[in-house]
Length: 173
Image (tube, rainbow, N blue to C red):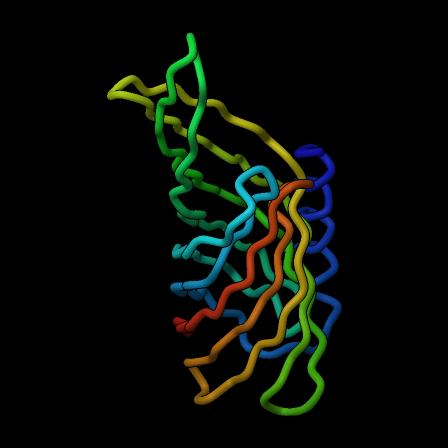
């Protein structure tokens, strides 16, 4: 999967020179939202940050980190009930494809790779697990000023989780 993403990024870089495009820009942003992981049943607050590079008005590459939430759970062992929590985190690398609907509003899609990390703690004992999966999402980006915009995005970090977030984005031209 990762090789396909790298190949697609390379093709995007080569193809981007053929578009009549908006100025190329680095950008960064912060997001906050809500994540639901099916095994835990409830949604938790999420937050993160990201950086990216816009090749033109249609394509960008983006990397980010997001804390997906802390989930409480109970487990029974040896006829005793133990309580614990799981902290879920995400790092991701994505290709972003955008299409302008008007001068200020774009619709965009995301396709990428992400690494999910879960760390569980029960009675002071911790253990963790990693999972690498594909990532996809769709969103809207609204430009408030030439270097400042806001996003709303629905994202699927794994087969059993969903994230909805709002972001602020700053472009550095």
